[in-house]
Image (cartoon, rainbow, N blue to C red; front, side, top):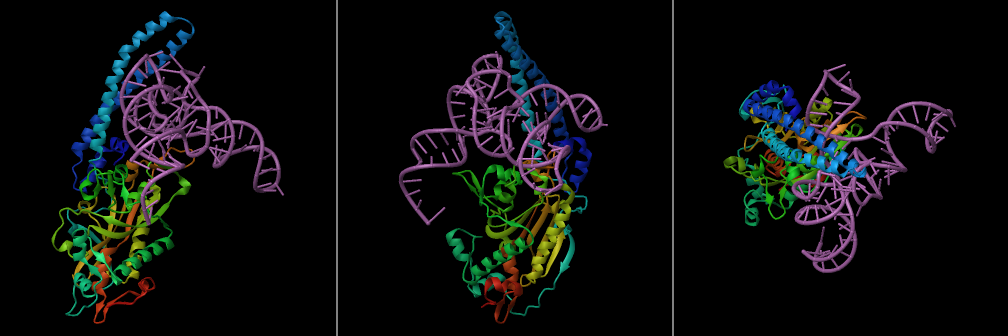
Length: 423
RNA sequence: GGAGAGGUGCCUGAGUGGCCGAAAGGAACAGUUUGCUAAACUGUCGUACGCCCAAAAGUGUACCGGGGGUUCGAAUCCCCCCCUCUCCGCCA
C-alpha cells in the first residue's frame, strides 16, 4: 500500500510511475484525494466538537463538586446536540476511512526508476547470462521421464493421495530434496541469515501484511474451520514477524532465512507449464528476507541477487538474470529480478528465484517501522527472494546432468546427498 | 473439548466513574560526577490522525486486547468477541 502522505504530496509522480506498470492510476488517485479532503474536514469538525464536549464535561464535574446543581444540569442539556453531531461525524469519518482504504489497496507499488517499460515477459531485460547448456545426446529425456526411469519421483501416487501437483519423492529423490534444503540453509547461514522455522498456516492479517490479501485470495489454500491460509511462500510468516513493530535502528538490517513447504492453488495454469516439476501445488523452498533502512535497500537487493547467482553457480547450472519489466512485475514490488536456469532436455528457461525490493509497500501495510533515537518512526524497506525454490532446480539438475550412467550430482552437493549418482 | 484466572506504556506493575495518556520501579537514551568499570544525581522517555507551520515548537482528538452500550464524563460499569495462562481431558 502506498503511503497516503506520499500520494497527497505527489499525485502526478505516482500516476506517471504507475504508467510503467501499465496501470492507469489517475481515476483512483482523484478519488483518494477527494475522499481524503472530506476525511480531513470531517475530522476537524469532529475533533472540535469533541473538544467542546470534553470541556463541558469537566465543567459539569466541577459544578457538581461546588454544589451548583442547577448550572450543571443546564450545561448537561446543551451536550445533547453535540452528541448527536458527534455520532454523525464519527459515522462520516468511518465511511471515509473505509473508502480510502478500499481505494488505496487498489494501487500497485510504484516501480523503481530503472524498471523497463513493457507489457509481457518477453520485454523483460536480460541483464546477465552465465554458463553453457550441456550437449545432451539423442537419448536425452525430460526430467519427468528421468524421474520415472530411476523411480525417484512418483507423480501418479501423488494424484491418488491428493491430486495433480502433489508429487511424492522417494529414495534418492527424497534425499536430493533434503540435501538441497540443507545446502541452501547452510549457505544462507554462512551469508549472515538467521534461520527461522515459521508456521506454515497464517491468519488474515499476515496475508494482508505482505500483500497476498485481498487481491490474491484465490491463490492460497484456505482452512475454513479455523480461517487460516496455507502459506504460498515463507516470505509471509517471516516478514510478518515484524508486523506492528517499531524496531530500533540498531537492530537493522534484519536478515532472515527459512525453509518451508509452499502451497499454491495455481488456478488457471495448464499445458507444458505444469508438466512434471514445472509447476506444483506444493513445493519446497528456502527463502531469504531482509528488512532495511530505505537508504541501503537497493544495495541489499543487489547483494541478494548476487548471493542467489552464487548458489546457481555452485550448482553448475546455466542461468540468466532478468530485470522484470513493468508489466511482468508483481503488484507489491518496486523492482524485481528473476533468476532462470536452463533445463536442457526441455530446452526451456525455468524461473527458480525471484528477488524483490518492496520498499515501503509491505511495511506500510504491516506498520513495520524503525526508529533512531528520538526521531519519528520511519517505515522500513522489506525485501525477499527465493534461495531457492526446489522443483525446477531438481528438474534442471536431472536433465542437465544426465549421462549414460544416470544423473550426476554436482560436486558441491555430494557432501549433502552422500551419493554421486542417481542410477 | 471442559473449568478457572487474566489481558494497562519497551518490561514489571498500580489504578473500580472526573484530579488518568495513565503512579511507582526497571530498562533505554542524554547530561553531571568519575582515572576506568560500577554507582549516584538530573533530565528525556508511546503511537496515529488533524490544525498551525519552511521546519522546530505548539496545539486538538483518539488509543489501557477488539467491537458495541450506559453516562455530561469510562482504563474503571454492562454486553459480545478474540487472545494468553493454569488445571482436567486428548495426544505427536
